[in-house]
Length: 175
Image (cartoon, rainbow, N blue to C red):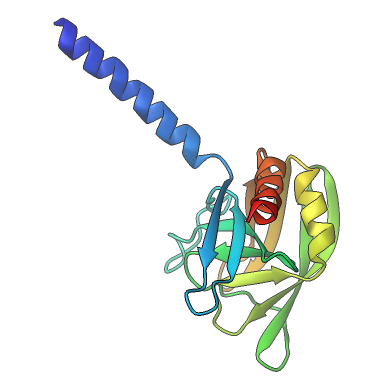
């Protein structure tokens, strides 16, 4: 094999491994409201699929955990690539309450989540506690009763979450 081709192949494998590694890490971002100049910082987990493939039309759904911070408040949510169709919820005025189980490392807890009708996001209710659990756990497994699929599970990696969370708070302080 010629030397240029060998170097090209080595560099290609190296760049591919960096790309794959980067997709498995928490990332941070900032958004700026052009009207008010208000900034909001976010820490996001890697996207995951359910532990078992969902039936059509949900088979392509991916999810991630997000934490938002605007300098005053923080909020935690699960984002989905399409609106999750959760059943056995409690219907309220404009939103549903989802009572389900969540597993932080090896500890199972009952949790109550909120989803506005048709939204692609499910919000946690006790944000400060959830941020602390994300920072101090290695994994979180969320159970959702999904229409025509029964209980489905999303396993989110939390490695790097604490650093990403610290980074969004620090970036707020630096601005």
